[in-house]
Image (cartoon, rainbow, N blue to C red):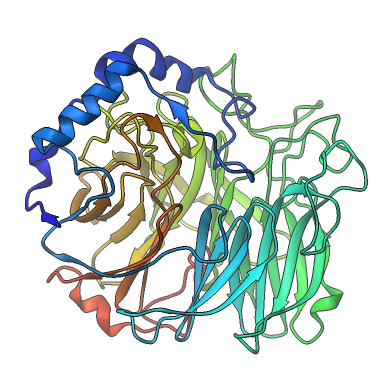
Length: 500
């Protein structure tokens, strides 16, 4: 293991010639059909890189500019406590949720439950086989929710892949009873238009509302017709989850014609995804707010009436954002961090040619009051460590680290690893810690790295697509106060009020 004290010494210029000549143009002109954000539900094919890129990656490893293949490096204030490799599942690891002493880890083959009462030695409690991408996971009380965004033969966990052009195909939400963590029970399913790529919970006492995000409709898909410019809202009675049903489909991007509203994408805005739904939504129930990352648009909306969310403001960045992927509020709800998943999570975008403003985070201040609030752009943040052109790397899922008076975040960057950064000054964000592995390969671009990295009750948990479940300990005077904040439950897309 190598400890690199100063990440600034590793601002290498990998991939300049290749990216400048071809990769950059490809990424900026590819529409959602050509580069569907997030890996597909079948194993990702390895992509051969040019001989010059492969040679450059090997030279960078030899010189110490990047870690060796599978080698772990991190800042001095990060300790790698544990790694639990994949067991029964061979699919891609995806998102995480937490409850008490348990972590729930999504995988394209199903989900896995860990006992994390001893963070140094997590134990597998259950593995539930239920194929269907992305298997985005969240929990509330005795219920677990699982997203299916791949066309399946039916809603069972024994389903097989089936074309979306067939009316009988199924996509949507699955609901499990997890009152017995060792034996989850599948209790309900709700089909939703265009499936469920991700989902966000708005929990109430008697019911749980689910905001279902999905996109990329087609006139050839019977259950996913254009313009699809909204989200599905599901109401789940806690005491009768089998009665869960879609209760609304609010249109977030009203517009005339078959294309609806929202960002038109190319050719009007080259390199930008056309808005045909949302990728992910983060809700802040304590403030009745939500932020939506919706392909070509970022939105702020009110959820005072959870069945009828209302858009307050809508922004676009047609210069540096290709695909609005996810959102995170700060604790005071006067900032939102939006991520741009340039290249769909399957490309090497953390190099000098792509630069610091693409495939990055966009930090927005929220100014004004009530329905007159506006999103005001302040700056971009991107990890300062350039990666090899064999490493998929781009801004991905992260969470707040709860410290009063500070805006701190931990975030996954696929093969760029895990970054801890400070955006207290919206205009001048800076990294304060990191953890990463060397490339999976120096000859081919393979999908891997941290999908989600979240702070929960004193530790950072990361679900690595290829390497498994990681536990990190962060020791830093700037973040140490967060260790006193303990939650009973955490779904990152349902942000808690940490200090209530």
